[in-house]
Each structure stands twice: as C-alpha cells, then as structure tokens.
Length: 262
Image (cartoon, rainbow, N blue to C red):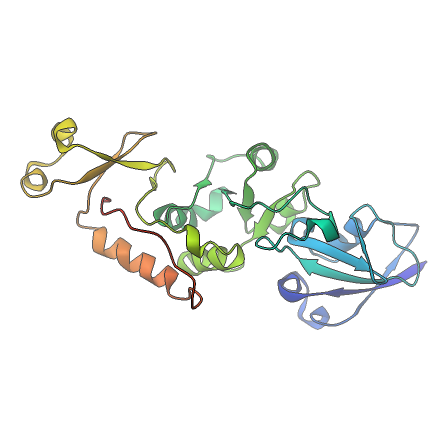
C-alpha cells in the first residue's frame, strides 16, 4: 500500500468534508493510480483543477502516484493563463461562454439578462451536455458534482449557491465577467442577440397603448421575439443592480445598456 499527502487550495475545499478542508490529507492507495483518479476519489471534480504540483514539480492528470508523494492541488484560473505551467487543460477560455443543465433555469435567465452567452438544452442527457461543452467550447454550469467528473469534460464549474441572484454573482466573480456585462442585449428566452428594429416594421406586434408613446424596440434575431421597456422593466433593472452590487472597485460592471426589453 502506498501513501501520498494531498493539500487542496482555495475553493477546491468546498468539495471536501469540513474535517479535511485547508489541511493535509493522507491518501492511501494500491498500485499506481493517476493523480486525476486520486483527486476525484477525494471528491474534487477534475474540471475544477488547473494546477497540480507533486514534490515541487508541475504534473499532468495522467501522472502516477508514488509512495511518499506530496501533492498540491490548485483551482482553475480562468482569468489567468497558466497553461505553460500546468498543461492540464487545452487552454483557458479567453471569452467564456456557458452551457447549463436543466436545473439552473433561473440562473440562465439572469445571465442572459446581463448579456452573457449561455445555452440550456431541454432535458439533455449528461453525455449531450458534455458533447456540447467540448464541441462549442462552453463551460458547463451545474450543481451535479458527479457530472463534473465525466472523463471527457474539459471545462466545467460547480455552482455553489442555490439562490439565483447569488449564483449569477458567483459566476461573474469566478470568471471575471464584469467587463462583459451588457444588460438587455440578449434574448432571455433563446439566448439570441437583440438588435434595434424600426417601429413601423413591427407595428402589428405592438399593443396600441404602447405604440402610442414608445418609439424604440428590439427584436431577437434568432427567435424573432419583440422587446420593449414594459411593466417588468423596473424589476429587471433591480435584479441587475443586485447582481452587479459586488463588482470589484475599478472594474467596469458593463458597457452601455440597451434600453429595449420587456
């Protein structure tokens, strides 16, 4: 039997039981397991890891453990390219896009409201979510830890909070998306881009009372849904304000807003 000492850093401790957080963990093993297998056996999904150092030397997931190894495991640095050091993943996603599982519907709507590119297939199997993530270069958002351990998945994130507004803050913080926020520029229904449309072109779709006073409208270029600042507009702006409240000092929480929506 071999024995290695593991230490997990920062938010990777979220996946460990309280008694194992922020301290050395003795891991016993038979044979020569890979470091990836050992990390996931201890409860941490491999997609949350971006740097592994054994005995002071960076190694890949396929590295085999040996008796007496000391292993330091660090989280994904999505906003900092350390690929020349770790080589654990193909490359950081410089412009993060997302695919979310079916249980994160409210988070998806808020992220789209902020202008973040996130798709959500209807009731997809795990294999389909992983396929989309790999094919389209999207980070998989989920609260299913087991899904993040899928061997073919390269980019994923476990959403810690169970409250939609806090979930949105969490994603913005985790991937440093403050500068990519563009409220009211993406369709909350299908994720398509919103673009201005002339009132005359959509007059038959506008309620007469609204058409009498409002001149500016936007329409989704994918699904064709029409938007304008209606009765829910103030509530949506309040939601945006709640999400952007913790934006770090000196970081622009977003670009110029579009005035057309709901």
